[in-house]
Image 1 (cartoon, rainbow, N blue to C red):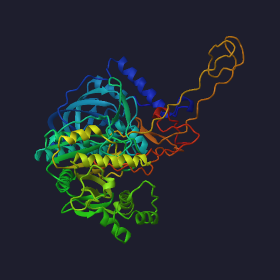
Image 2: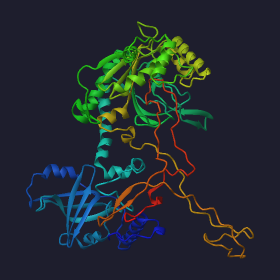
Image 3: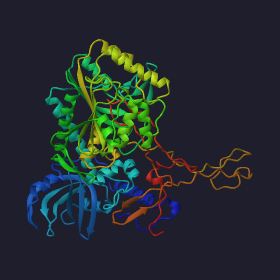
Image 4: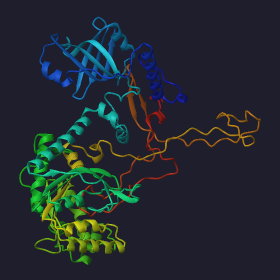
Length: 615
């Protein structure tokens, strides 16, 4: 039955609540007719794309005589007297159902009275092409599989609010085929990685997510407590140190694809939960890892884009050919117009101040070089570029450079101004590694937060002997941004986190001070003893509203309009990077704007005040 089109009164909770109530009424009517609105299953034998591929060339008005059974979500519904046209969407695409009172059983045709956009149905019948040229399934059977109790977004506008896209990701998935393609692209990327690594003799392993020491990177971890062992643990910030333990154990080529967690800021390149690929190869070095990194990325690009040359954010990007290699010191020297070394701290402080960098007293020369590189050079590197030989101060897990002890054999790959891969010639000397950790510990004592913790268990493993090795960490989410042409990391993570907000509640019912009797909300005098009541404090006004366009079966739309006075999540200049093997990022808190108003960033749509479009 079509949902009501008249506007409900404001006190009824808005049009969205009215539509939801109408769908619940429809649910009860279906059950009253003996129709189960949540079926156990359906025997489908084809997807929409299969039908299009097999019968896409038939002429208008043609009948194939071939029967198919399909199932999907209703995304378009038009009824014209004794016939109806329903477009369903499955995992592969859309297909029209041609429904007629003459061909459907009475029970199937009666179902049309209760069918709404968003319902999931199954249908079987002959594949035909209508006289107007639309490939269709002329159904002689129609069954309701799942009744949708909430209306989907309006077909053409969909969900516009970026934060609402995150909170209503399942809705975005079924209403936006482009986003479903992003999910599929991630699967193809991971498959390409595994194919490349497996072909080279690497073994995929799994290492702990809960770590006793937050090592392998420099970041603020999420903490938890193991009740059975009565110990504090950290969600891993990197995969590195356990994979190196595996190298000690004799597996010479290992990799892992997994989630890392860093309790830090959010911006277009950073998310507290992200996916990393880390790989380690015994008897290799950072030159080996550069070759492996390029092979992994080009294979993933072909799997997703079919080519190594494509546009990202309106600018051409070419992943073919030999990738450029530069040094950190050389790049910074070119940017500032004079030679820079990791020894002249005073000169580096002056350079930093000249370029609007406020150096902290605990920063050494190596840290200053890194800050200058990130400020002046990093964003300019659009084509794939390997940036090599970082100062020792910022790379405590990398091997000292074979030719210059002031530097390390640490390389970063940058594409489109973003770091995609850090790679090392790995440190294997346990004495040197301990000395590096001690330097970090002394820096922390001086007040520097960007330090790596001492990890005695890892040092003990190194003392048994780890072969010389190269290692890399690849940020899967950032690479996916490039391959799917998305501007933000939150667009490629299936369920990125959003701010948690308390749900507003109704005012408490007033209680009588004299007798303790609870009374109706609007009462002025106690119903039991007649004493005057002190008015209960009203609930805080709900000021957070979002744009949400939804459809009813008749095709009309309702628009909930409004603006968030606090701007939702404000992404600050967080510098925490989703890397596993480059421990040089400090933890920074997400930047939230505050006000005297209650925080309303996480209101469920049914609790959001809606204004009618006529206002």
